[in-house]
Amino acid sequence: MFTSFQEAKDWIEHSIRFGEKLDLVRMNLAATMLDHPERSFRSIHVAGTNGKGSTTNYIKNILKQAGFKVGIYTSPYVVSFHERIGIDDQYISDEEVVHYANRIKLLWDEIYEITGDSVTFFEILTLMAFLYFRDKQVEYAVVEVGLGGLLDATNIITPEISVITNISWDHMKQLGNTLESIAMNKLGIVKEGVPLVTTEENPDLHPLFRETCRARGSEIRIVDPTKAEHAVFGEETAFSYQGRDYKLHLPGSYQIKNAVLAIETVRLLEEKKKFGLNERMIFQGLYETTWPGRFEIFRHNIVLDGAHNIGGAESLKKAVEAVFPNKRVVALFCMMKDKEHEKVIRLLESFVDELHFTQIDYKRSATAEELYLESQHPRKAFHPDFAAALHVLKDVPKDTILLITGSLYFVSAIRPLLLAL
Image (cartoon, rainbow, N blue to C red; front, side, top):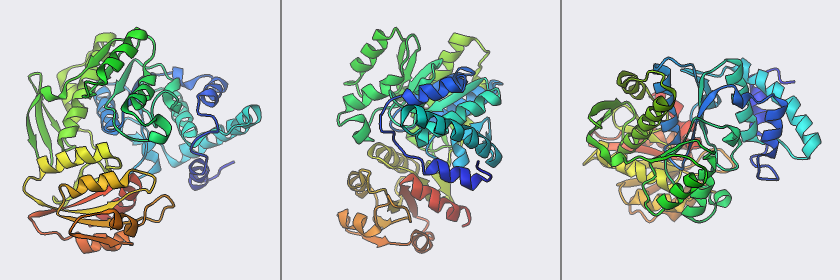
């Protein structure tokens, strides 16, 4: 039995990432043995390549404004392990993590005896969240998909609404090497008769979306985020949508897209459930949403953003150009060696004035020198020590921003140093 949070956390984080069989057999068996905690609350299921975390948080905060007790399950975390699981504005506690880890460890042993296969890292976290939500009697849970959709551990829920932010290149080893195969995997969250809301903008994928929903008897709403108007970018973002004005603490043009998706999702939920949603609830829920490590601004000219794939990097470029037009950009970058770092580097090279590379003490991290050698930027440098790199770069001139980006593991490691500036 685990007696401390660190013991429980170590067990969870050292569990295998992917089972020998990529299916939902272990999750369905575990849910049955636990008397189906996932059926004890209503849910919204959010998939997509980028924007899932922000969209999930927007929806959670709007539902909280509407008076519901709302659970939230997201991944990966940026600052603290506890960020993955929360209710309203509170994360799960150390003591609760230990309690649920002990419950699931007993189950883990039993399932291994039955199936000969281990319950995986993400399955443990998902079961922990669902048990926690049941015990705390949440009314709604907004559940973010971890990887793909079809065979993701979260896909044992039957939500009120399914949400897909977008389809881009990520996790090709697991999801396939075409956008169509990635889309099919993410569309695996669409259940019989459950509506889908999406801001997928690629018209070539729309027939696949529509046909999937038609086959499952599910309504589909393809939301056009370009209908958001009068955008004003700064450390806050203001915009209008369908005649209503909104403000976001999360800056950047891509956050407008995520916010519009959240608006349409909760409006559809109101059509289904008639719980008394009004515009004040939507406005306040959006405005109160913050999200560490997502275009987070420190000292007015240091930006921290976990753009860990090409889609995220494209959104980051648009956000930097919108929020900080005509500013020089000095970037500090770190990425995992199993990600598409070369493509992200090419994109960064298209808009930053200096490109600095660093690394973290983690087995998957590419070295600063490896990333440096991939770059063709005329003004580049590498720093094996990320804390020393920040110390060198942090005092940029007023006409310059320091952009710190790349892996979420890197963002998690460097953010405490930024808070201490």
